Structures are given as C-alpha cells and as structure tokens.
Image (cartoon, rainbow, N blue to C red):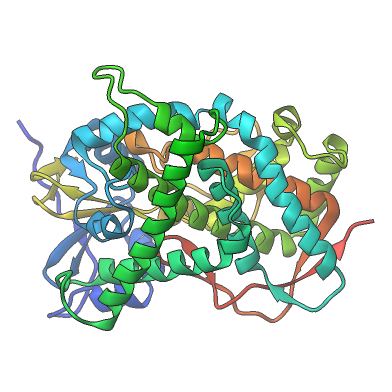
Length: 448
C-alpha cells in the first residue's frame, strides 16, 4: 500500500504566470531561496506547466537511477536537439543505449591519457599569448578560455587545428546556444517554419556548423587518422550485438554534441577557477607550491597530473560554487510518487547542482571558497555534489573535461598569476552553461 500523499511545498507566484517571471529574471535565486525554505521538493508553476525542483539526495537517486526510465530528457531537451541533433546528450531509449555503448570506450581514462600531449599543445598556445599580455593592460578572460576549450575539443575529437577558425566557430555556437536557451524558456514555442529573424538566424547557424562537421567526417574517411582522434575511434566502433557502425548522421550529431556541450562548460569552468583563485591568495600559494614541486618546464603527463591532488581540490571546490552545468531537467513519462510527493504525468523535474552545492544542509558556510572540503578521505554525501550529473546519463566527457582543466590550471599556474581587476561586478548568468557576465577583466603577472 502506498504511503499517504504529502503536501509538497509550493513557491508563491502570480495568478496568470505563476513563477515564470521570477524564473526568467533569475532562476538561480528563485531555486536557491525556495530550496532553503523547503529542502526536499518544491513545486513551481511556469504559466500552465508544473515544475518540481528536487533537492533531497534520496529523491534525486530515485529520479536519476532507481526510476530513471520514467524520467526522460523530454521537453527541455527538444530545443537543444534542434542544435545538436540526436547525439548522446539529447538521445533517449534504445538509441541512447546503443550510442553510449559505442562511445564509452573512446572516453575512458586510459584512452584519454594518450591525448594529453594534444591538450598540452593547446595550453602552450595560451601560454604564448599570456607572455605577450604579461604586464600589459587588462583583458577579458572569458573569450581566451573559450578559445582554449574550443581548440582542445576540436583537436582531440576532430583531429583538426581550428585555432584560426575558433573565434568564428565559438561565436556561432554561442549565438546558437543563446537562441536555444531562449526557446527553452518559452512557454509557447513557435513552429520551425515561422518566418521571424531569430528562427532564420538559428537555421543559418546550424547549416554552417553542419558544413564544418560533414567536411571533417569526409576528410577522416578518405585520409584516415590511424586512431589518433576520438572521431576515428567512433568511426571504427561497432555495435557488439549487431556489428553495425554509426551512420554519417549519427557521427555528425555526436560531434556537434561534443563541440557544443564540451567546450562551453569547460571554458566557463576555467573562468570561474581563476576568478576564485584571484581572491584567495592562500589557496593560490598552496596551488603554486604543489605545481612547482611536481612540474618542470615540460608539459605534464598522466603521472605528473595524478600528483596534483590540491589542484584537483581547487577544481572540485570551484565547480561546487559555480558548476558549469547548473541544472538538469527530466520529464515524467507517467505519474509517480516520491516518498509521498505526487509527481504528475509530463511534469518537468529539475535537479540543480547549483542549488545543492550552495545548500547549508550539505555544506557548512556554503559561500566560502575552501578546497579542503575535498581533501582526501573526506566523505561527500551522494548528490550533494554532482557537477557532471549522475546515474546512467552521467556526462560521458567527464574525464576529458577534467584532464583539460587540470592541464590548463597546472601549466598556467606554473608560469603566471591571473589577477582579477578590482571593482568589477561579475555574476553567473545561467544559460546552456553558467557563464560569467558581463566580462571578467584580468591582468597577467609572470612568475619569476
């Protein structure tokens, strides 16, 4: 017999729009304040759509693991699918299971360690630019880190040097992502054929990105890359049950997913790390001491990176405060009950790393930047910290992202200090990722 239904806390809103105006104005504040008042589940109304923010870790386990087949990516991912196609990030059901089985081997730790030299060369380009900027006027760090992230994913996944095209491509992805996020927030979604400027602009951007990816696939097919890139590994992958490989459409969708989702979260994540280090001199000093003790002037390999335990803590704590993937959504296939809380059919369920990472129930003094929270042997409660999601759909690119970020942090810290220009008002802007706005102006100081 089911337990009696519980009264789920509701966030107050207006009669017609519910919580929609507050969500559009600042979803981070809306969700966090509601979670502090009701730390299990909070019900919102976005015009006519019911939405549930799930905070309690046991309930998140219910959604992402125990009953994950009832909670699909659903309506919130339909807008993202317009940009990325049916890649692993947006696929569902049998297609997702097949693609995950084919893709997973290419993103194992042991596979990715063979790509560290590629990541190091990408960071060396940043080092060369930072040498030119050292002692010079302030500049915006965000485009620099986005360029690094895009260069890294382009060279490791596609096997091409896109440094000369990176700025244009990054701007195209940024513009397309913004249009996708605006559509996600819209209660009424205009049809694809509607002749307005932003829909036309989106279709043009998608066509340009398709041209690039199809060209790369064809080059790999005719010239071959000898297994040196993740794309070549995907092209060689065969389904163990059927022996089938990926079609060109599936390859294109996966590559767009890796480019679009991979670079934006990694680039934004790097920005927040340097932002926090700039205001924490004692953390900066400990990080520099560790890097100096284990790194020489050469690019680090897997063994050297493994020794940088405090650098790993700095990354973890930075992404606790500013998780690049700030929220995940699911849609209920059928009505459900979570510990007495009724979840209607088709309701949207939100699981927010940002909310749980800032909740004092899980983190004492949650706004303080303290990498020792992640010291070895410290126990972190499940789903109190989940920057890469959880369950079967955990981000497949987790290890690639962490390798890239640790490599960049170590190599740049070895040579420079990044100083935040005082007096700025920088805030996290939720979109596809959590980006610093309006800018992050810094100066570069070369270390002796």
